[in-house]
Amino acid sequence: MTPSNIPSPISLSYIAALRGVAPRQPGAGFTYAVVNCTKPWLLMCLAASNPEGRFYGLVTDSTACAQAVAEAQQCHVENVVFLCAAAEDALNGKISLPSLNYLYADETVRSISSNERSALFDLAKKFLLPGGLFHYSYRAYENAHGALRFLVREFAPEMTADQSKVFLRELKTLGASYFADNAAALLCLDDAATKDMPDMFFSDYDEGAASSGSFDTLIALRPHGFMYVGDSHMAANYMDLSVSPEAQKIITSCRENYLYEPIKDFALNRVVRSDIWCRGPVSQTDSLPALFGSFAYGIIAPRENVPIEIKAPGKTIDLSAPVFTKLVDLMTLMPINIGDFLSHPVGKEFLPSDVVGAVQILVACGIAQPMRGLYQSDANNVAQPRFAGLLNQRLGRAPVSAGEIWMASPTLGNVMSIPAREALVMQALDRAGLANSVSVLLPELQRLAKNPGEASRIMDAANPTSDTAHHMIEDTVSRSIVQWYAYGLLEAA
Image 1: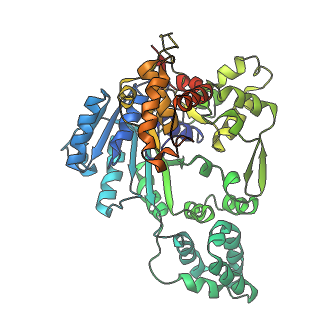
Image 2: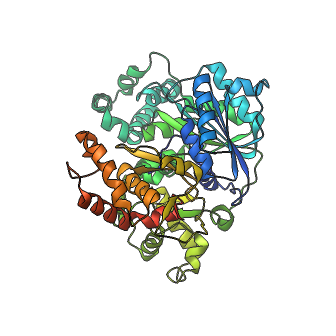
Image 3: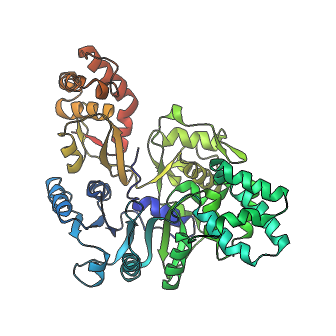
């Protein structure tokens, strides 16, 4: 339910905590900048979801920047600033940026030149504070064969005949996902292995350019005091969830190899990377309370949709143990922190270390998410729900079509995308209250019914009636209203 374009400060801090980097304290102010900001609306939602932060969007298109400034003013999002600028402009003083806690750049859609990349890395070095996090998304290889080509070009020329045979076997083990997508390459590898002639396979990869963006990025950032702390795609930080046990053994044995990251790229069959780097110097800790105690954790999916087991390469993760089921029961109601669970009657029987471990597994498997904290509201008239926050209130006046609506969630600390069906019901509640919501929803459904393709994605009836609207409100409210309040999307007037 959340777009993945701009990572939240909460998710970045959580991944860094996996490497021992203690997160900032809840409520502490921070600064966050996005270079080449192509989706200003998402940045506005992120800013509205984190009121203690100050956000800066560097937009290279002057028209898009002017529009973003105007929309931020209309939505009263006062903690976001849009600047018509590139990384070089911040370095040469054409624009003013403060010291940063978070920096994000994405060049997966539009590749940048080597000069632009150098400027980006210099910007990270100059403006990020010690302990600050730099999230960099980029294409590490031109195509799906890039990582294999790079490894063959780096390793094969210097190997003895016996080493080449071992290397060929290791490539087959590491590249299970790659070879599943490239049957011809697998046939060639098997043929070379059967004939005991590894060079038959290697020769297919010894021509043309061979480079690794992940290796080049490491070479560029490490001398400037940056430490790699993980991948923004949570599961990629856990090899036991991503590759077979046999591949894990090879990867573990290569941990000190200077090509460790390209080896992982091949094993994960990835062309695009989403790196998180930490600006040094930074002190690390192994204290679980310091690392994970300040986060809230929640599950956005309905309880009935949470699986009792997760399939991973070569293993099954059983989530039926009491510590998992009781955590899930609470997390699907509302976000909780580890202290909340341990003090709750259902959590008192568990050791803190067991709870931390179970939470990490739920997050690693993509079931739970680290969050900012529970939303607090002083209002109490639940018969008249209102959109919470000025940005969400503006969304409440906008026409809804099929698809998803982006909203700010101060609980999640990130953008939440709400299905159109839910957004329509929320609008009706906001405009007329629960008692009169049918009279507001019905005209909207009739408007959508004029486009059958769009309407079929939202409702079952081709010709909506009052009963259609009533059932839609009753069904949606019974399933979702607790979550809307918990995540700060609605508040009682």
